[in-house]
Image (cartoon, rainbow, N blue to C red; front, side, top):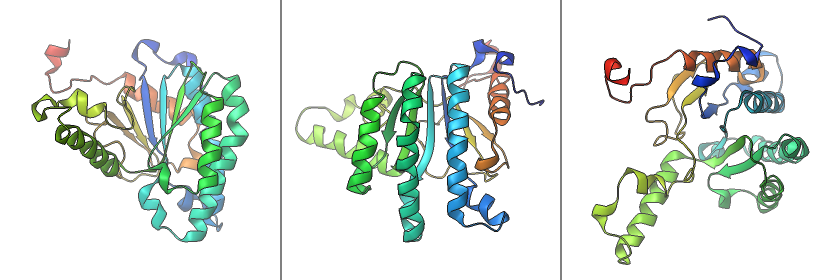
Length: 249
């Protein structure tokens, strides 16, 4: 498929409402250049800004970025500390532009595991952008889909035990309303950079019928043209949700 640098080339009748991205390859990008892994993460922040701006201009409603997984806490402490610092500094730096571009920032994940100061500063940025009515930028920080699903089960089990809910009343919609993405549409498109063919414990419930787009391009090199290529690929697919092609037509 030919890449396009022009958002006007997109078929706006077939835009995904919600795009989720596994931003992989920062460390490998740096190592390939003889740099410290932290340099790759810093370069990846520039890509976050580039793709957020492109998604906003394209008219995407939700952009969810897998920023830091619960498994990432197991990385070397120096790298974890640098990542937390980088994430917060980058968000604070970008907040004025998010407000200017009518972008609302929010977060999903186990915030209780974040350093208190980082969590407080992030919450301030979320509050400052809360009036945005354009793109919703969702940062998955300290996030694990299995953690999220277990937490939803605990909440529902607690309600059943308290007599507030009957077990037979639990269905897909109710369960989804107890996930951290409650109120958001499920991702229409999941993009993974870096070439690995796995979903890495990311939005497992929500991506049941998402279209997948995997590129070998490392996240720091992922361009607006690459993003538009993924959007165009999505626009050319038939989403059947278990039905036949004839039924969908």
